[in-house]
Length: 378
Image 1 (cartoon, helix red, strand yellow):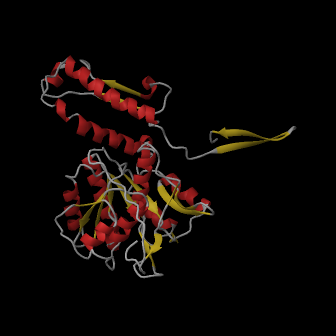
Image 2 (tube, rainbow, N blue to C red):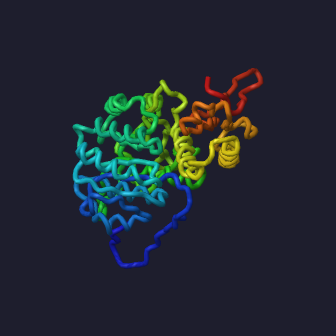
Image 3 (tube, rainbow, N blue to C red):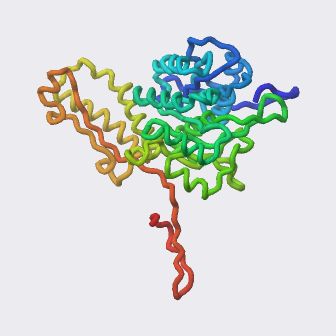
C-alpha cells in the first residue's frame, strides 16, 4: 500500500474490468477528502487512483481507508464522490449525483460517522434513497466504540429497511505512518467482500464467512453469546476466529420480521440485480407493437436469463419449472392495460437462502454414541 517506506520492487495485482460486462459489487463511496472536485463522480479501478485524485488520508475522515479496504478485499471498480462536510444537505447532494450512474449497486457512506449527532437521520436518508432508486443496497456502519446495547439502539432506528445491512464492530487497520493503526468503519472492507463474492460465485451467494484482508483486529471482540443477541435482529457481526482470521459473520438485511422474505442480503440483492438486468436489457422493446409476438419475445429473453441463474445455482428446485416462472400474456395484459401503453410481465423466482445453522445431532444410545449427520435446527 502507498506510500512505500523503502526502495525496492513492489508487486501489485490489478484486474482489468471488461467495459461491456454487467457488473455487480460496484459501490459508490461518499465522504471527505483532502482535494478533488465536489461536483464529480469519479471512477476508480485501483487504489492508487484515489491518492492521485483525492490526496492522502484526511484527518477526521474515513473515506480513504474505506476505498483502500475495498480494493484490498477484491474490489475491481468503485466510484467516489467528495463531500464538503458530513451534513444532511451535502449527503443529499452526493446521493443525487450518484443516482445517474447505472453501474453502481452498493452505497457506502463512512464519513457519516463524523457527524455523531445526526448519524441516525443520515443513515435513514441513505436507506430511503436506495429504496427510491430500487437498484441499490446500502452498507451501513455501526457507531464507533459501541457496545451491544448501543448497536441494538442504532438498529431500532433503522428497522424495516430491506435495501440495507448494518455491520459491527469497527476495524483496526494500518494508518499512514509506519507502525500506526487507526479504527475505521467496516463498510469499505465489507464492500470489497461483496465484490469478491459476486465475482467468485455470484450475487446469490451470501457475502459472509469471508476473511477480511488488510485488517489488524476488530475494535471490539464479539463472542458467540453476544452474537446470539445481535444476529436475530439483523446486526451483522465481524468476528475473529483462531486460525481463520477476521471474518464477516452475518448476512442479514434490516428488513426485520415483518418482511421475512427479504431477511438475507443475497436474496434481496439477487432480486435487485434481476431488476437491473431487466431494465438494462429490455429497453429495446419500448414502442414495439403490444401483441402476442412481443409477449413471446419477452418470455423468450427472460427465460434465457432466468435459466442462466438456475444453472449457476442462484435458484432452488430440481428443474427450471421449480425455480422460476414467467408470465406475459392476455391475462397479465388485458385491453385496459394495453390501452394505457403498458405491458405487464410477471416473473417469479425461488431464491436459495444461505445456510446459517449447521446442526449435527449426536445420538447417545444403547449401542454407543453415533452422529446422524447434518440436520435441520429444532
